[in-house]
Length: 338
Ligand SMILES: NC(=O)C1=CN([C@@H]2O[C@H](COP(=O)(O)OP(=O)(O)OC[C@H]3O[C@@H](n4cnc5c(N)ncnc54)[C@H](OP(=O)(O)O)[C@@H]3O)[C@@H](O)[C@H]2O)C=CC1
Ligand SMILES: O=C(CO)COP(=O)(O)O
Image (cartoon, rainbow, N blue to C red; front, side, top):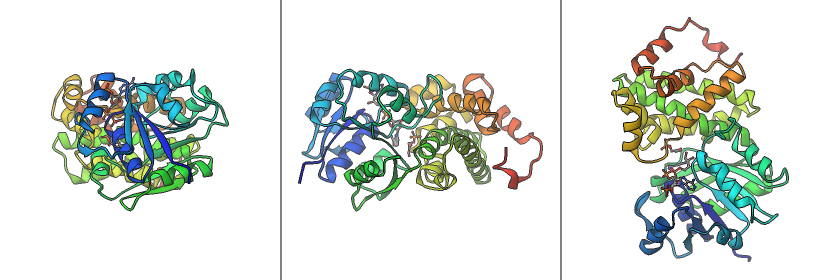
């Protein structure tokens, strides 16, 4: 049997957890990070002490700070850098990647340049023929590293590619489902982070379970509205990469987006809260991109709008809640209509 090889780009908590998971299934894995010093520490410690402490690297997981080395190792790459670094990572790859490159990603977010989806960016920089896939679902890195049972969706328009990738990561503790709806999976993964900030704000303000459940439900409506407009499939939003990830992120304090919301609801300033969390908080970018997309497509996304205003227009969390509550009365059953 030919050896299964994968290169994983991005040595933060999620790239490291996925590298460990792929290695556990028997793949040979090369994990790339952009800071030589950080990669040196990973190599010496056989552990990512900064981003994923306590998860030992399997022997078949190697690390490098040299992107060319990854392309010499394999033409199958999985990108797990933050969305703001996604384009530059692709551009760096493009100059020396082979024509046979297959690109998957576990990044959750939009292209910050224009709010396009990441698969559109990959195709525009590479080719319509490049196999592409997005991995997304309710998956905290620490729990995957600790081998707590987890399920994820691998979405690609090319079924052979998603099926092959699903096998690269599948184990008895990590269940992989395939999907052809890459649009729905990407929209769900990006916009749930905005809702997690909203849910955190509500909890930080001292509201209760009723408020949280209402935000999750109405947040899902917003995700579906935008997702359908961008041609995602309704059933995807009820799946792991939709409702599954939305519930996870809005309800558990492992979520950095939720923790940011809690800090804001308690009155902490944005910069101080971001600094204290000290890791990527994708919802800060996604709130702006989702808000602009909603305006572009004339879609009502009131929770997104209020989160945007809290983050970018200095609106107080209490005023944002008041704005949501004072909206005109609506019929719930019309939620999916324009
Ligand atoms: N953590 C999780 O549980 C999950 C995360 N995700 C998604 O994974 C993506 C990555 O997040 P996550 O790993 O959690 O973030 P972390 O904050 O844990 O790590 C971010 C990593 O990105 C690196 N990085 C920052 N800028 C660049 C750049 N320009 N080029 C290359 N690498 C860069 C950082 O390196 P350095 O520190 O050296 O700057 C660091 O290694 C996000 O889109 C997130 O939504 C998805 C599912 C679960
Ligand atoms: O996407 C995630 C889990 O599925 C991680 O969420 P946070 O980025 O909010 O920590």
